[in-house]
Length: 178
Image (cartoon, rainbow, N blue to C red):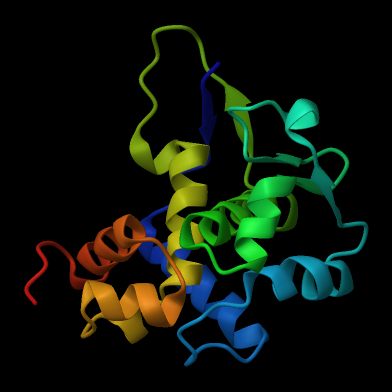
């Protein structure tokens, strides 16, 4: 099933990520406190929000997390949650991705709908791309990483090698020159 959302640009998502970081005093700190944000800050600033740690049998082997918009809940698969607690970059990004879905769809009220079969959704209207972009901007603030090396981004932001290279490319507006 394919969904389409209201259009958002990377610039808009980068600004939103900066505002979120600013709200919690992390606008100039490379490592976004994703678990603290999920466990402590979100329940405090978003009325009705809660999260659950789910087993693989509850979520399914191919699903690492999900966001229930109607019930204002984020569910994270247990092994992913533990990995994020332990600093695994991919798992930290997965938690941030679900947080991004929640912020966009519940807090910001971005409207989305199912599309008809065969309809090609433009990237900037794809809810998955929007969550990926917002989570990337939260985890790797462009203004902080633009002059860093990919390895420095991995070390300082706590993300995977793949995420570091991708976010650096986006922060620099194209090719990476190290």
